[in-house]
Amino acid sequence: MMDNEVDVFYRELPKVELHAHLNGSVSCPTIEKLISRKPHLNIGHGMTAIGKGQRRTLDECFQVFKVIHQLVDTEEDILMVATDVIKEFAADGVKYLELRSTPREEKHTGLTKKSYIETVIKAIQQCKSEGVDIDVRFLVAIDRRNGTEVAMETVKLAEDFMLSSDGLVLGLDLSGDPTVGHGKDLLPALQKAKNCGLKLSLHLSEVPSQLEESDMLLDLPPDRIGHGTFLHPTMGGSQGLVDKVVKHNIPLELCLTSNVKGQTVARYSDHHFKHWYQMGHPSVICTDDKGVFSTDLSQEYQLAASTFDLSREAVWKLSHDAIDCIFAPDTVKQQLKQKWIDLKPQVF
Ligand code: 6MZ
Image 1 (cartoon, protein in one colour):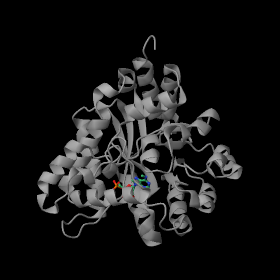
Image 2: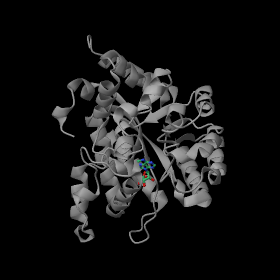
Image 3: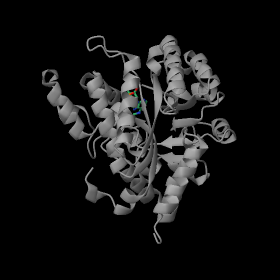
Image 4: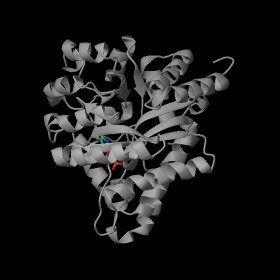
């Protein structure tokens, strides 16, 4: 993303990013560094990012993550990737970031799921000690394809870190290829997580075939929804699902470019943002995978504004209202709201 393509208003807009997968957020310069560390893998740039105007099926997107995972398989890699990603979000005007990632074990490098999370936390702490102007928290991700047992194990890990990380680990993300596995197998683990105080952000109805699963998972209820593309009746969902989301007032994390490039939404103007936003339902603009989808949060705000004809006041309110959807405690919300007051331009 070239700076000059995005209006300075969007760059300077203070922003909250709530839906960012660590390995999907790796930028080109960081990929270059990873490739030079592992030339024997013969991985080229075209294999890790979907450029401007390009599209892939969702299935092809998941192949891209596999390539990136080959490049990121040591503690050293994770430290570099997490540090770079945090600094890039900060440079883009993000003031509060909830990063999510699936802990992986790599026997050949000695990486364990525990050391994976410890390394992400180390990166967060290092950025903080360097004075990078961003508050970063972490959500431990469950990959839905790995089933019940791994989900339970991940909840236990997340709980341990929630108790020992000084508030840095706040909750869980449920993600992974939506065409694989079923939420009912993960329900006990998600219920357990909720009972022990972990916040839940669940990918729901990212593809059309998940209505029954979404209906079941909404009864938990989750604290936030990732995508929710096919929940709304106009997208093939149902009023019953919308009613549940509204009743529990569950914010949606909406990722425009990701959905268009992954071809679950035909064009920007068809994005379900418009339905939820018009209803006045909490809707948070996010990037999903800024590296893979070649975007950044400023650009996503600009796209939402130009597609749905939002005034600058409305865009400011959109970024401000995202603060109420964060998982960190009220004291952090108050600090952020003060920051927004301090940074608000006299005129738009
Ligand atoms: C569902 C997604 C996703 O965890 O290795 N992930 N899950 N839908 C999406 N929409 C495009 N984008 C990313 O980051 C990569 C992982 O995040 C999840 C997938 O499980 C992917 O393997 P981490 O940091």
